[in-house]
Length: 88
Image 1 (cartoon, rainbow, N blue to C red):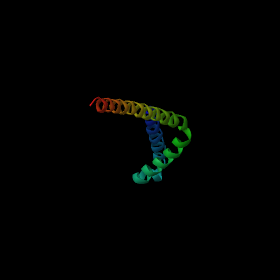
Image 2 (cartoon, rainbow, N blue to C red; image 1 turned 30 degrees about the horizontal axis):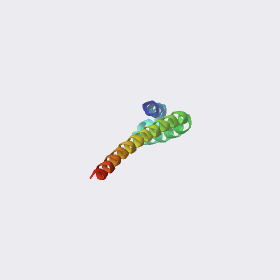
Image 3 (tube, one colour; image 1 turned 180 degrees about the horizontal axis):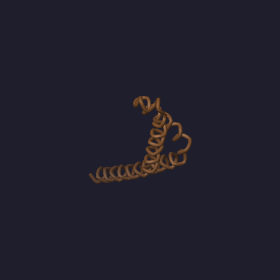
Image 4 (spheres, rainbow, N blue to C red; image 1 turned 120 degrees about the vertical axis):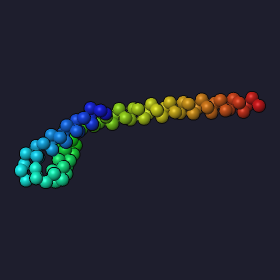
């Protein structure tokens, strides 16, 4: 996940500094930022696809692990409550 974020930042700054070389854009910083953001979005969409998919897969695994551990704790609590209610 961190690798993908760093690559996105590098792509943005690469686009920003490349566009800053254009004299008309260098004068207008807001337009420069907007165009750099849009260009980096397009470049990242195509060039960083494998990194994005890897990051999404890692997040999905973390969510499934947490969900499984949460379900196991919930089941243990339910079993303890059932044992307690049967013992009364």
